[in-house]
Amino acid sequence: MQLLTVTATDWIAANATHDPAAMKLANVRAGLAIVAAVAGMISGRSRGFFSKITMLSSLGLAVAQSPSLFDFGRRIAANPSLLSGLLPNVATQGLSFLAALRTAFAARR
Image (cartoon, rainbow, N blue to C red; front, side, top):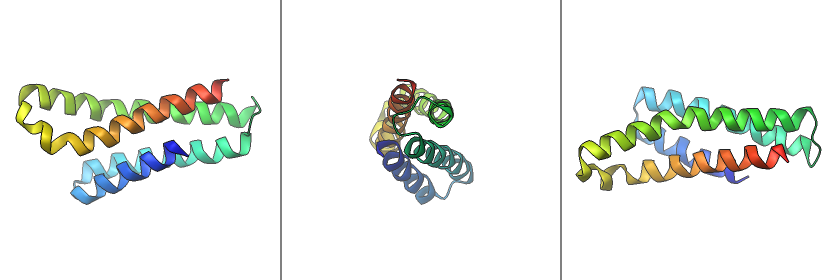
């Protein structure tokens, strides 16, 4: 649920910018988060097929999230004054990345 909540916040933040590239990537991440959430609810505590789908979609979400985080880090390193403006996006995407990794790790158990 944490993954779904953080990804929804990230999706809202990306759509508020009206940037087509950010909106497209946010839609991909939201789709992966929904797949991970549904598969996680179906799998429960089993280590079967849906658990593997949860793990794979969560890892896919983390991979989809990493280029944005890398880009933000690169932009902030080049111009530290951008930190205050980019901090909300960095925070939501960073939390989404960590939630995706946590969900993948939990599905692996």
